[in-house]
Amino acid sequence: MLLLIAAAIWGAGFTAQRAAMDSMGPFMFTGIRFAIGTLILLPLLPISSKLIQGGHPKTPMRGIYLIGALLTGLICLIGSMLQQVGLVYTDAGIAGFITGLYVMFVPILGLFIRYKVNMVTWVGATLAVIGLYFLSVYGFKSINPGDWFVLGCAVVWAIQVLMVGWLAPRIDPIQLAVVQFGFTAVLAIVIAVIIEGVDINGILAATVPLLYAGILSIGVAFTLQIIAQQKSPPAHAAILLSLEAVFAAIFGALILDETFTGLQIFGCTLMLLGIIVAQLRPPRGFIPENARSSS
Image (cartoon, rainbow, N blue to C red; front, side):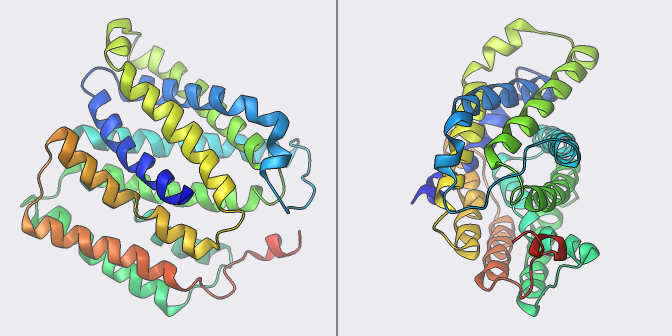
């Protein structure tokens, strides 16, 4: 249930992100929402050991681990910016489905760092790619630039997931989140001030989307995921979290009056099916060699 709530929060977050683009620039929106999310997570630091049950003692965040956390923050910024720019040109519902492809890209990119991928994952990836074709090409009569930005975002999120997958077993996940989100916020705000300037009226106009994206999408949903995945198998968790794409489409239709053609609905269905199929059976040996040595 907690993972389902997290998926719903993240799905609705696409609507909030899309709405905010009418009032402010993508860099400033990203910076402020990650700053809010960081502040929400800060009070959890003293009790993080109670939230993370059954784990091994964590290594202090310094040296290579601190560098890794900062790099995940940089990757997080790149992914967020590609997503925000893409949302300027495409619908929130479609962006949700395309972003969900990161579930496919994780094992595919993992091949380069000795992850093993079984046939089920490749079947899921094929279904997802076919779905993306119908969604982007047939549905729009031409390829929407926003779709390419969001697809790039999905690839970047996959890289981020792989990096966090290496770091999380070794250091406190909430400390990792605070450093990652905080660094993302600082970088985004600095870039926003240089490129976009500071528009107080625009920020105030986007108060509701900012609060939603910061408090719920980052602060609450991330915490729910941490708590829930202590007892939920990874494959089961991934299936539930992949429903983020469905919620994105639902909220996009209800709040932003977004509509889908028949072929777009068919494409979204294939993409969701591909995401679920790829997670029904976790890839055998889907653990990096260096992660095994830590247990």
